[in-house]
Image 1 (cartoon, rainbow, N blue to C red):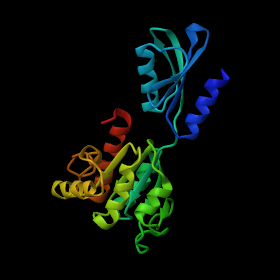
Image 2: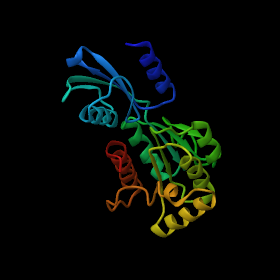
Image 3: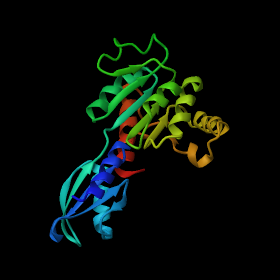
Image 4: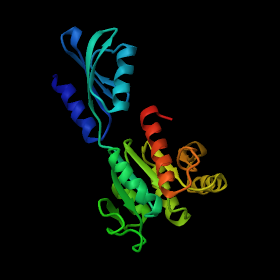
Length: 232
């Protein structure tokens, strides 16, 4: 591997970017680098090779593929998945373990000490900091999902404010459509434009008729998965 390519690969990994190293096996192992879906180094890649690299990044899966440039090995270096859940509520008690099973490193944020206890979340990292402080410290990246479940603007809005200033791939909050519209106005009053506040999905979760906390957790994780894998 060329030193310049290696340096770019390591720099991208330190910045928690999504990196795919492309080796064109049919061309003597010529290497190229794709970072966050765009080519960052190496000879120009054909469109189908670039799209194959993007698909490998979306699916978190290294593999060998047949392309118009011949066989190519796609080696994925994705940062770990994280989920930050604001609100140590009943839905969180279901969502946190489900998300961990799906491969997320989960942090539950809630300054209300009566809710955010190790007893209620025995196997999950819990922060009792205020949501904005916790989110600033956790620094959401493009492999992070942020879900606000408190249903209280005093706690949800500061977290969403920080999340919208990040590259978090999934941002969602509970609440009716009426409450979601009011939330959009509050976030715009904090300086976000309408296109940015539209990143907040609300009501959170796929419309599957969920009623119980566990069912709502399923709908949220399903929507998060769809955005992660399909981008919408």
